[in-house]
Length: 275
Image 1: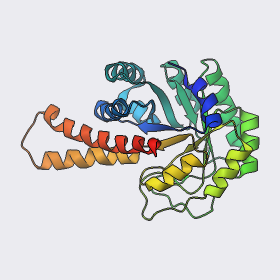
Image 2: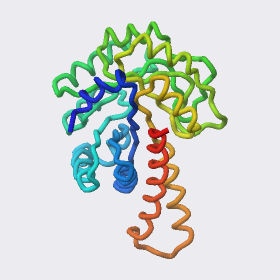
Image 3: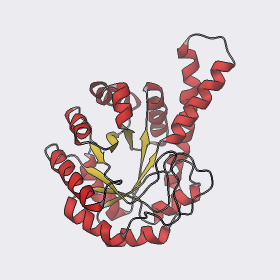
């Protein structure tokens, strides 16, 4: 299997897209892998720093490797939204295939400095680095139209000075579910694609976006689509419903239904690659 570093070199050139899906435990991981196997698709599996702490840094990579072999799918393990270099070092030291350093809430000079340090660390392992430039609202925050959107010229400078392999850009998405359908600036996306043609462009905040928006994003230059909240919601909604409707105490009989819900959501996302 090719390294993600190698894959990234051709994604932008060929205008292809990979889905990157967050998991939180064995069950959500199984749901994602089942969907990847059903669709015969490679996917990026992601964990946030909080999931890294929850599951244990030494446990995650072996768990992903063994599970991917069981489902016979190609996957890469990615650290999502690391804020600290220590977290990056932990991931790199425990077999992660890719890392993201998120300095998006810093000013551009500080973001560039932090990202360059992460790129230097990852270079020793030949691991690709993703960064974020612009303002993608976090959970509980509000994304105001046009505010904090990625500037194409700044994106060109950022990529040139840091050497990142992938760049998460702000075009109107937000993390978590949306209270109302966002209006994405696809023209801005196309401008950024044109000015940094060889860099993988990443769309964060994809949970809850209409399918036609995701398809247009792919057609306009997005190479990596991150989905997280929808999987958490599918798993927990199913789990709550199952627990409330049974006296069963064997979690091995309750969890499979929730796994199927995650599988269904993930499969629907992967179906979009065929449209």
